[in-house]
Image (tube, rainbow, N blue to C red):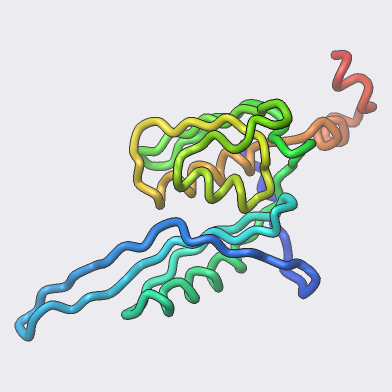
Length: 171
């Protein structure tokens, strides 16, 4: 069960955007070829807030700007504990499968292109991640954010179950 922690954007949140992929689309008509661009962008504050967006336009800069605006409307909060994720998680979106595993301090972000952009934007500094199946950046971004949204920290689990934090750790 996915629990999405939607975040309302306020002026005090400083979001940094990262370009994940640009795709050139060609439309052939009677008059010749028409080029347009689509850009997938990830925004985050590097402290647990992440969002993604897709922008399409006739120019690259306009597509990126539209992607950033779409990403700001799609923000979620992710639990980050000491620079890593709280537990192992897998997720699937389309043909992309992702596996994310916590790592000890000093490991760094061991992940491929699209996953790396998402994990660095959310503020993860130490993680082991693997993408299986499709390497389509659109689906990888969506699967990675889906996996991050399904993560819960111990405090949230204790609150949902209505028990103390000590019982969560000691079983």
